[in-house]
Image (cartoon, rainbow, N blue to C red; front, side, top):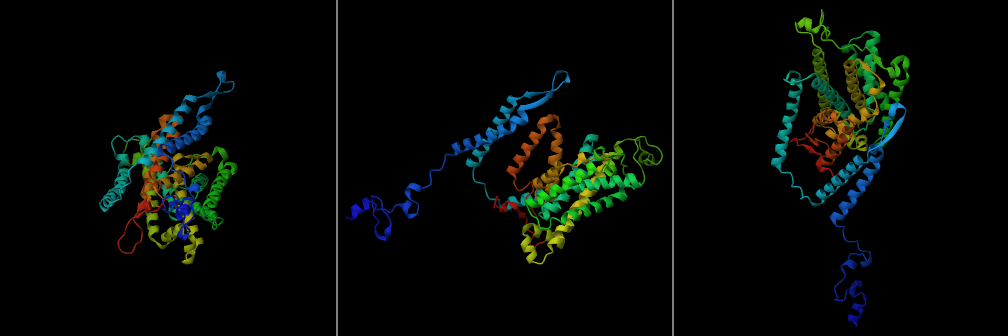
Length: 468
């Protein structure tokens, strides 16, 4: 009788169903009926092909209007015609499909990563200690190196400008954890402050430079007050709106800013009263030192000016990080509620982060104005804020060295692909995607803590799981 009951699925002792052999059913023991058991896992190749196909479809939807259709001037200049480039679209979609498929296969079949040993960590730390001095020495000696051209110096000035902007924004985003999408507004305030003060009152660059920083810091405090209660996406939206408001005001206040025509004839900086005139003459830099007049002198001088400003930004940031204010910024980044519980004044902490970050943006804006001798609202669009934020995120939040390396890679790499014309943005974006997939926490994801009890050990972001 018990055998019949077993064959009919009647529960035995304890109410646990048995199979025909009298062995408890593992599916029923786990509480999951046999009919509702999870399906067998999908084969890796089938899943990889399906995912690569979906990526190719998304790429097709993007590339058809962006690459496949292009407007050109018709014959005789009478109108516009649409030119199609379906072969280019097919090539790009195929590259996306192949790249996604290879990435999925590599993720599925790659061997388990080996744990980082103490010797390997020590070797990486030793290499990292030499990177910053080597980059600094190269930056100082660049104008004196053989083979350095005028283009190389101009590119170095551009890279150092973005390094300074990245270090300024790193205070707000990397240390204080406040997502700012309108940082270009402080850049514009500094540039227009110097341009208006120098052209209206005849003040020199060295007098206007601290004034431009103070005015930018003032606007940083004004931005900080309305956003004291905002965090995350809401803060990003408000700061983005602030940047657009500044740009629209500069564009429409024609009587003060010149509107879309901008401000021209901005004075150049001098070296202790010595001008850098191309023709030389009394009172010029070349005449005082007995050199052959050359426009390169002014470029080299501007290079060292922005290098000194960038190093000043780095030095102040490192010093502040070790102070109670810097530790309050990092605590605010980790947990604002815990900061309030510990008695930290969150209002003052946020305002100081916005003000100091904006001040360095104002310094960079003043240098940009004196270097270009012309500014307009078109130089301060949202894309500038996006580039600066990308430098900070790509380099690693809170890492000074990482921001410098990211600025060199992004700005210098962007210029390296200039010959590709319309394709360089595609190559540039693809390179950024690859880097963020390879190093999701930034190029430099670990650093030595500013203050520690006992032995100072590096803080590694790899210990934090993605998406948790």
